[in-house]
Length: 331
Image 1: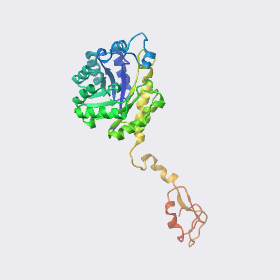
Image 2: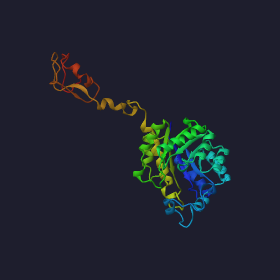
Image 3: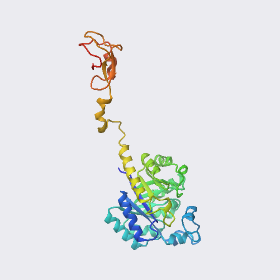
Image 4: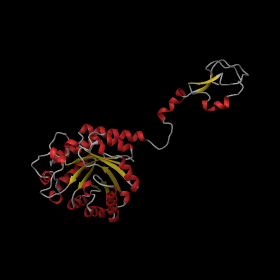
């Protein structure tokens, strides 16, 4: 099964439906499987005196609160309907992350079949139970969490009614951008082995190297932020991929999928033509007269591999020559 690539538009539309349409176009052009936004009501998510994260302070107006910052990034239900319709027209899946109970219900009522749980809600029992009761496909991000917290969240979802086989857990780090030394990509394998579950990776590093590595390590889902322009105002643009970078990431992932192949060690069709050219045969290392014994003194191995394989060497040693051989002639 192909890696499912989610192009994370997030709030990089800056509250503009027109920019959201353009982001969908970029996701389609890149070849991503889905484009994901964020659904929330600011008053349900943060208090009016909540502080911004450090990376948000560096990329937005210092004078505004976290509430003010995200309030202007809201998309109402009509915007959601328009974006869903546009995604259907463009043949790409619309996804969104709900950040509060009203938003969970809104996405459910809109017929969204996959719910993405953000890292910040992994310790929110009522929120997790609400989603679990819907019995939809769930993608669970695990930034900032310990393994026991992942286990607790997983159990809540399952005990609430979501089937384990419908859950994919994403390893993640919530720093924008994530320093390479903090990625800890091997933890994705730990999650897979600990819970015997499908895993993926939600990436906030700069560049695309870690996403490609995650695919090679077995990620079934890759989620990556993208933007129209990293220089745009907003909290996440700077740590996002620009259109050509997103396209390059998708292309690289698809190539890695092909390169991974199967678990069998087999002869590939493309290299079959090289066997006789590159492998060797047993040949006469000097002229040999009929009746002579073949020995290490008069035979050797050389290309091409059209004669007797050198793996038959022990069987050939001591055999009586049945004809005359010229030097380099295959035995």
